[in-house]
Image 1 (spheres, rainbow, N blue to C red):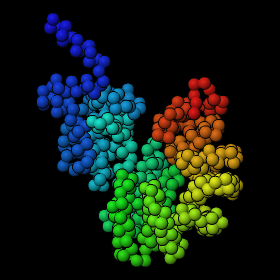
Image 2: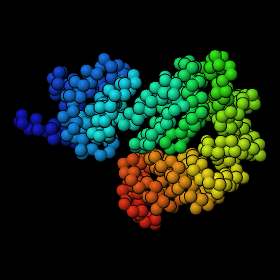
Image 3: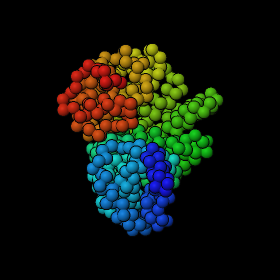
Image 4: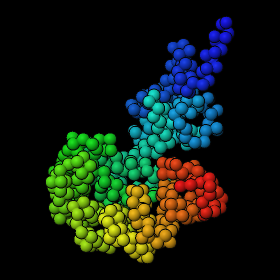
Length: 479
């Protein structure tokens, strides 16, 4: 009787969800054992949030406890997992979460040397580790690490006033490119919000002077100009918008001759117009903000490429005709021929401008490609594609031109996995799968999972094949 009663729950437990089994295992342990068994994720979350070097000893003790089991699991995990699957490999993910907390703690204080051992372990032993929240949210450890590495570098450059001398290295994985952009954006808006005007002004001027780009060709100047708005999580409240505007006004008051302090307000007004439109604001409010932005632009000297793409944005949102926008673009392109945001914002304006606008957009692409500006054409196409507008211009675009532009971009920015991943998907979409295989060769496990979601089988095939696969679609693989 007793053996039967003991065996039945055990057999039944094999069919329970992993988290239920995990909970039963925790509750079967003594309080001391339970703390060691289930508190690593909770502790890692606390250490990560507090970023206090005084917790280093506790983190080391936790790593010593979990590392033997984690290292045994490391060879069998070759991709990110679901929250449920991760419960079966908890030691592996616990180790990654603790290592992330340790690396971030040291990076936050600029102590890169002390962070290096934790970073190396994440990259070599726990590249697919995740933090696991009780609500089943996960955070990819390596993705978070990339963000903190770039923030550390940028903050150090601001502190030492050497922003004009930095550059981004080649991407190590699919997370580097997006996190370079996110770090640049956050460094700008956070310095603005905290009122550190000296560092903020140096950041803008250094980036403008050096023409800093991410490894995928995104201009840092455009990123920081675009950051003149609330952070994403705060962007839906009027109070957060007022906070940013007030901070810009303080910047202008402290540095009345700053070109970027005035450009920042103009770009802010562009963003605020969009916010009001999305929130159902009155036409008068939207018009007032955008027209005020145009008024400000007349008073700002044209000493930065950011002037031109900000002007085009404001002209577009106020409904200015194409013959008024085109001269601004042409002047900007003559002065700053490599400034990709000009082509990107112009494409965004015209692709949504009806049949005539789409035809003009297609002609601009042809013109850029024919004048050895294929890289700019590809960046313009990339933005149009991921905005969901490519089907509107595809019938008007010569696909051979698209292929040439893609090739030009890969040659110009060869160190970006993200760019190659994005353009690979564009190539597949237009039926040039051999081209996609060519530019994505060698990217096994380094293609962007979010970009290729729902098409993972194609990405795996393209990156794993030693030679370009057949261009013809197969039964087992579809877009």
